[in-house]
Structures are given as C-alpha cells and as structure tokens.
Image (cartoon, rainbow, N blue to C red; front, top):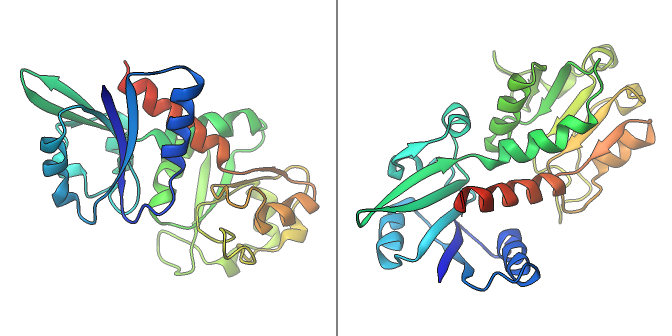
Length: 247
C-alpha cells in the first residue's frame, strides 16, 4: 500500500483528501490511500516520515509551504524560483528517504490561465502580495506579462488600491485576485477598484473557488470582462502532484 497525504494546520476541511479519495475510487486505484496530517510545526515532519515508510508523497498547505524547505534534499526549478513548495515526492534510496519539492500551484495557474489570454493582454494587476501571489508572479514572468502588485500597504514593490484608476485599467487588462477577499464565509468582500472601467478586453481571475462566483468576478463580468475562478487551477495542481508521485 502506497500512502499519500496533506500536511498543514489546521486541516478542518480538505479539498485534497476528497479529490484523491474520489480519484482512487473512480479510476479503480486499489493500492493507494490519502490521509490528512495536521501538524502545527514542520519540526514534526521528520517524525511523520520516520513513522510511516509507506509515504510516497505529500501535498503541503498553509502555513508550511516555506517551513518545509530545510527538510528537502532538492527542489525543481519552479519551486526554487518561487521559494515555496506545495508538493513533495518521497523516494526510497538504499533505505534513505529522498525528498524533492515542487510547486504545482504554478503549473495549475499557468495551464488554466493560458487559454483565456488574448494576444494584447500583456499587462496584469495582481491583488495581494502574500504566499498565494508567489506562484502567480512566477507564471506572469514566464509568460512575459508585466505586472503591478496591488496591496493595502503601499511600498516600493507595490501600489495601493487607490492607485488603481480607470486610466490604469485601460492599460492593465488582466486582473488576478490572490487575496482571501470574497472567500466564504466573508462573501461580501472584494477588491475595491473602479469596476465601471472594465470592458470586454479585460480578464478577471480569482484564485478563490468557494464560492464559485465571488463578488469580484460578478462585478467584473457585469461590465463585460471574461472571468475565471480557481477551481480548475486546484484540480490541475492536484493532478500534477499525482503525475509527480508516479513518474
């Protein structure tokens, strides 16, 4: 029996366990199981690994995407550039466990974004500058899309929401929300920008997927923008994890 799982804290509800349990049933995969490992600190990771030699892969969620880095033997290029890991493969090498870190968020975001982009969409606004923005910024650089980061706290690396003017929105036509604004149960919140400046040339992408249509997406769509939530990204990154664990 090969075992996979998710580490993070807390893990009160998990997309990953439901996704992989249903995948195993649907595809008649009988030699695998997926468990939740709610560990408060990554200092507990070595004991978890030592205690279960059947572990072959882990997904990593908040707050451990950075904390796992010192325990890895290697990282792929995307994870190294982003500086965060959300997937770990565990290989057995002469009785030793070899851990390699990946960032499948970047893959999921890129593959779900690319089909929506028009050739003239070459500038983006990224709302939020937390951990979720790291993979987004990596992908935008890879796709040669210049971007500005919009944050509540203006700095030399970010602009404020007040700086998002109708004039700016004429130039920056890809809008990406990486914040928790609009996420259940706080569904009445949204990035405060002049939505009336949006049109059919805009694309609004929300990493939030619960609810499936946030106020950010509703407002953008009401002015003609194309919209996309984070659900496909979530599925793509999970399937990418499975590919990594089995390659």
